[in-house]
Image (cartoon, rainbow, N blue to C red; front, side, top):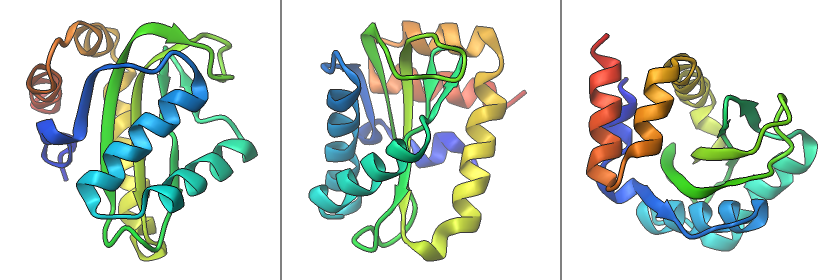
Length: 151
């Protein structure tokens, strides 16, 4: 499973308009609901609930907010980059600019773990993070992922 396959340009928001944590979650939840056919309110509620348990800011300026929603038929992933760093209660205390959000039904738990692992492996490379931050369009963002996944 390639992340670049899951993140077609319609699943990427570059640049995001959000300037705070709630705004970032809402903006990505809306895009995910639009792309997946899920219910925005349910998707948003699921991600916020999960975020209240423990921040999904994993460090290096990256966050992976996620949740489970029965209104999303299969695991869906969206991503985005903000123009300004957003305080996100990340593990390393640093603000976040790169976001990956995944939401799916309970039955997608195995695939969900694989996606989270794939994201973590890719973003641990500083050059990948830097290129994602420089992406000016959703197509640029997807191309960075394509190149990174060919490693």
